[in-house]
Length: 461
Image (tube, rainbow, N blue to C red):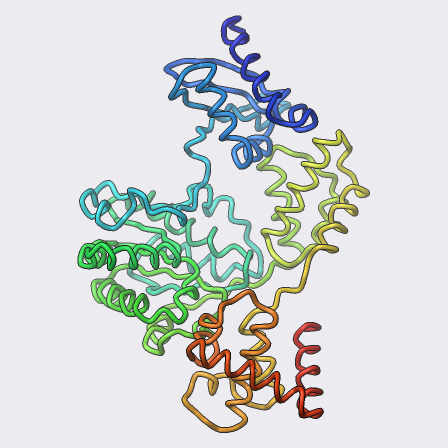
């Protein structure tokens, strides 16, 4: 190894050692080896993809600062990741390529900036999400098949494509896989992946900065538009109106629209009926929670990708006891590997039991606004669809008020947001509903008993 490079890297390690605990240093940094320093880029070798991802997620800022101090400002970082220890196979990954969903800051991806350089449009896709690493099973087979058809013939088979399913089942992975495949097969097409939140931020900025026309022209110039978490448009009438016109323009011109949501179009609350109707125009596909065999395969894929080795009994145990989402499965793998690395412990069934047990202890039942509305409506024998009508029937009003009260009790939502979801009412109506339900519960024993029963059903479901 070059002695000068070795000396400089040791200086980097000394700085890092002063900024992290001894246990963290020994677990994540001590085994890193500097390979070369050329063209102002330092290449370091890490022993697995797991180590690479952990450092990028938690300590890349410290690494950058350290490199600038020791090797000069602007020093770039490249990882050589050991992917196969037996055959000494590695892959090089740049820190700039570390996955970035792009939902936080629009930066140079603002509509006006992108309109000016539309031929160089950043699709904002998550490049690590591909069809190749999307593990198929019964729960997602239809969605994956439809997605591949769309990638092959965008705008010609299923548009819009509406993919829904609970959190963590792989919706974001699948739609990014579509986008990445389209860019590969049809490089001439302008593809854009954007979260509903970022779309809303860009829309608001365009109004404040008086460039709404640029905003609209930009989005109407897209060939393949992917909107993630479309349910976040709930209650945002002006945003929905802007998207309505973008949707119509793209659809009429044979462009591809792809949307994801945590619920089906029929279950979307706070969304204009004309939007829901359009969501149903094309193909609606649900991704269900993964079954046992798929959970095992997802774990094997994650473990292999990270260059790890888990006993088969550990994989089976995790798959049998963690079934909420793919995200939870991958989180367990990360936790087990972290505990094993930091504590120098074997990955065995005892460690798996402890980590999964800790996960179960801290896991709380997540109550959603949809569950609250459905539970209350079912209890009083009222159709859920009646909630969004202007009906003043006593039983419908009661369902709205109880749903608002329970939403205020269980969810971390503002009164305005609750009102948007429950009947599209304003915050004053929610406050009045909560006060009415509280007063009624204090004075009417029968109603108080009903309220407690609904609450019990909701929390035990």
